[in-house]
Length: 84
Image (tube, rainbow, N blue to C red; front, top):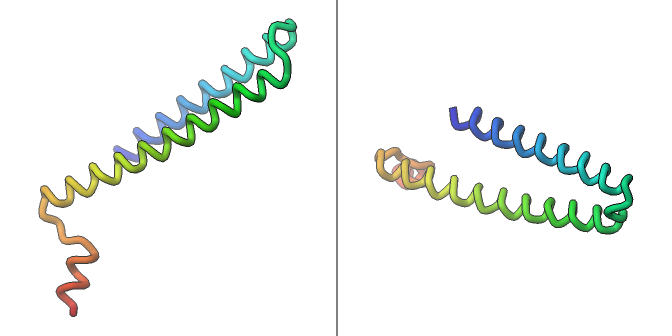
């Protein structure tokens, strides 16, 4: 379920990216934007997207660790400690 939710979110983000690129090309063709402005804007969006992805991954890791602790599930570290 979580995997499907992530894939849906990524698919939506990809679709949005494609639509933004199309609209920027239209504005470029009409002379309302120049190529360097378009490239700069797209690079800014890419950087923000990468930063957001990192933040979400960290939040997800934290949430998963909390669930594991709440459920009392043994971690790899716990099992290794028992083997020693």
